Amino acid sequence: MTATRMAKADRRRFLLQRAFELSREQGTAALTLVSLAERAGVSRPVVYEHFGTREGLLMAMYADFDQRLAERMRTALAAAGGSLAEVARVLSTTYIETVVADGAGCAEVSAALAATEETRTFRDDSQAVYLKEFEAAFRPYAKPGRATLIAVHSAVDGLATAALAGRISRAQAVSAAIAVIVGVLGS
Image 1 (cartoon, rainbow, N blue to C red):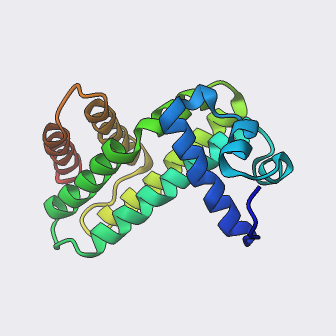
Image 2: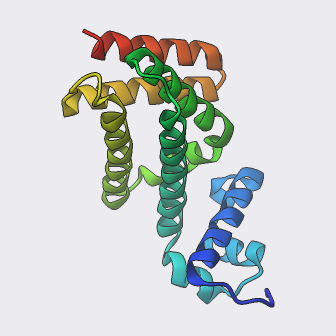
């Protein structure tokens, strides 16, 4: 067991980091609350207190990835130039590069979350994070409705997933994502 006490938020961050490590090394199927407690060097009740169930842990991992990606997009966009094409380039590059770099474990987590109504609802909420970010990024240049935002996000996410799987290169994914965004929102 760890000898130091952490604030609850710090402990949660520590546990999520260990969960991502475990998932990367052994796959999501090996990720349980018990295996996480062992990896983190904490008692089982500590892990159960933070996540409750394996699904709770998986949802927390996915939400953590969503928040990190959204923050990276906001940071990159803050330095972007003043055109739709530049915003499309920065947003596409950041999204795709982050998914390719950090998303392998999240793809497995996503698959594991598709099993129940509760987790399907969670995945819808996850998409809402990106719709909000995309809408804010594009607002100065276009006023896309919800259906358009879903279409653009789905295209960018699909291209990122294809690059992650190695079916297309990162450069191809970014180029196609920019073309979709500018093509849909620039008209």
